[in-house]
Length: 274
Ligand SMILES: [Fe+2]
Ligand SMILES: [Fe+2]
Image (cartoon, rainbow, N blue to C red):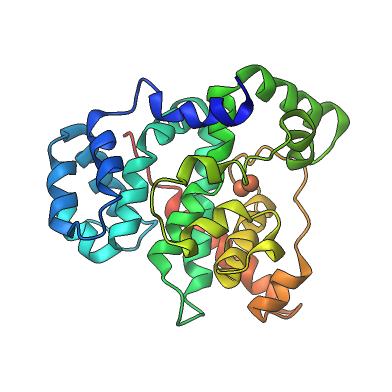
């Protein structure tokens, strides 16, 4: 079985609840309403409690204000809720087995949302979600290809190289671009998908360059602040084109770092399983 097939098998993970399978089927239909989605999620108590906790978390900035999943769908958007549900099983693995990556992702989500508020055309909820999901491919590799994952992590440690280079060498694909196989049937907007696929190579984004640049920067900021574990030993280099695209100047770095630190303090109190 090749790598692509193993990754596509993610849908068969034992933890994937039946309701997620139903939602995967539903995403094909474009006329499904917020209420339809809310109703399906509500049939699984564990999943709806999880989704409610997530949408009321400091990541989205509506703490404690959303009482039903349907209300959440209306406030955060259909695609945001859909992607949170579809990735629920991967999140379980991340929280239980890769705590540092969970922190990295939550930190990235919060920082990305804060940066996005400078740009009126951006959707902060969608950006937060992209931040939360951006490294999901690492969980996919560790759960579907554990031996390759261990090999990659050894290379990162011993050879002091960047993770995406090692992934490319071992798998022929990296944790960002492999997500295209995972999300391909989910009908997610390109503005949510491109930041996931290109967060390490933001210049490749054709349809969502600003969103991708924001996730790229937030990913680096959370790492630079020393919060969570991204998998890399070093802070990856900031892409100059992405930086320019965002219109920041050198003197903005200190402000961005201070904001990132404040944001990390806010999201750090959030415990999804607690
Ligand atoms: Fe990454
Ligand atoms: Fe990351």
